[in-house]
Amino acid sequence: MRRAGLAVLIILAVAGCGGRSASVSADHLGRLVLQRADLSKAFTAFANGPQVALDNSGTPRADPTRFGREGGWIARYRRGATRRTAGPLIVESRVDVFKSSEGARADLAAYRAMFAAQPGGTPHAIAAPAVGDAALATTFEQAGAFPVTYYRVAWRFRNATASVTVEGWRGRIHAADAYVLARKQQSRLARG
Image (cartoon, rainbow, N blue to C red; front, side):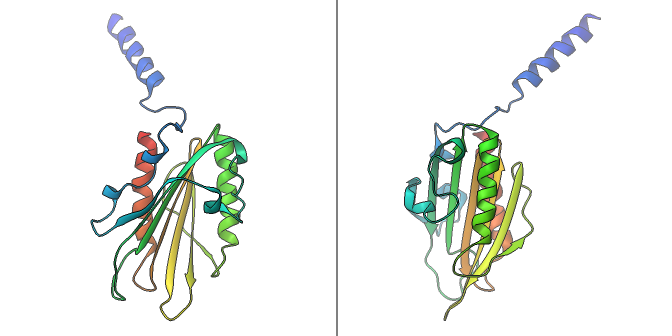
């Protein structure tokens, strides 16, 4: 009986710790977005810091205090390319942390509205990768002499939302390019 009691205590202790915190902390937002090491060596950062008003201007996510938001971060990367370059040419990674999971749910709904009203091309909802607690994804194309295709994934994880946007030449970039990066960023959120 003593062994059974000890086993129950160990199970309760592990369940109590869970190795998983109840929420994502806003203390180190810069660690929760994609890092240079998450991308191929061809990429360089051209923006990496707290989100500013311009980053969400004109969208349902424009209010920096929306839904109890505690802070956000954005990182953007690019690489040199020719018309034959396959895969992403530009990668954008975002995170927003809220006081509660309800705030994150509301922000994911705002992402949904933002994706539906995407300027510059008609968006098409696509199957979202299995990341976080809930996710959505879309694609659209920007016409021109050299058409560019965009893939966007947004998701909620506990009290945070995150997104990854990739852009590349039409026919040379695929949804899987965004999904791989979304999973890498989700790993950062889970470690948190």
